[in-house]
Image 1: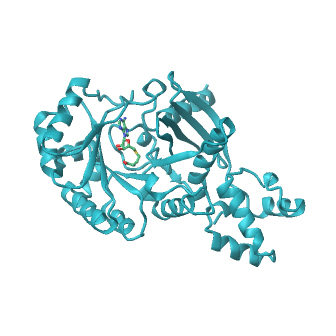
Image 2: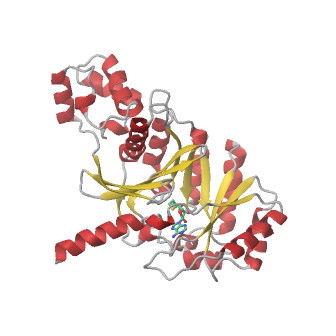
Image 3: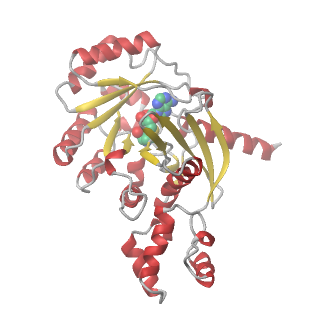
Amino acid sequence: MDIGSMYEYELESLVRDAGLPKFRAAQIYSWIHEKGVSGYEEMTNLPKTMREMLAEAWPLPELTPVRTLSSKDGDTTKYLFRLADGNVIECVRMEYHHGTSVCISSQVGCRMGCRFCASTLLGLSRNLTASEMLGQVYQINRMIQAEDPEKRVSNVVVMGTGEPLDNYDNLVRFVRILSSEKGLNISQRNITVSTCGLVPQIARLRDENLQITLAISLHAADDETRRRIMPVANRYTIAEILDACDSYFAVTGRRISFEYSLIEGENDSPETAEKLAGLLAGKNCHVNLIPVNPVKERGYRHTGEAGVRAFQKRLMDHGVTCTIRRQMGADIDAACGQLRKDYIDEVSEGVNT
Ligand code: SAH
């Protein structure tokens, strides 16, 4: 395992096995996870020879920014990072009145195949390691602190490219390290993990003793519609997902969020809103309505503003808490995976011509 993905006790045994004193483990852990450095040369309280030895033996993950795109209002910035093996991943920084949120990727590509999502167009290349997920947060945190040393990343959402629960072990490691006291110490309550609904993994996550928010990408109120837009619906029914959510809430006490992307003519009718209300009324949950971000490779159009409001009203009339997600960064292709897809298209066109 790479050094940036290790818990502190694992780092301690690595350091011990290398014949180094134990306090070096605490120093290295703090450099990597609290200060978020990207290279050993910055670890100035380690002797130079040790830094060289460590760089040789246990390289840190490489995340090189290759492209940055900011929305006109400046509230949303997308970053494309190149990894050591040449893969590229995207990550988004969003400024809200309550703080700075970072949306990270959990995989290179995705194999879930949601019809409206650009991340899935190229399939799955590989899982990200915990340190590659952490690196996205650390890089952005350092940028923020360079602007204002008082500021830091306040919230992290695992809603970028990839299905986090399809990369389960690394995801859990990521959450524990990100929230560790000697790391960036981001409260688990400020970490949201979004899933298309992998039922067995939701049950596993329930028992991890974490305080994170679970978000479920529901996007439909009946299985037939869901199967049309989300292939994963062939594996798990909405009833099974909702059961898993009830159980998650019963054990963790954490209110579930449901993501619902409104696609014109597909899942946005008044009858669908009623059906959805029937499924969720009385549950301790929250619905986020998002007009679908059109992806140019797909034919979907988003529901208009009036339609979104009417859908929201029907849910609220049944007592279902529901907000309309501000469409942030639409002018910079913030649709999941679109920036990465465009970049890869450009690079491969460049190679072919
Ligand atoms: N695989 C995870 C997390 C990544 S996607 C999941 O499915 O939840 C993050 C969220 O963006 C999901 O709710 C996903 O369904 C949604 N999404 C993807 N493409 C979108 C698009 N074009 N418009 C609106 N929401 C989209």
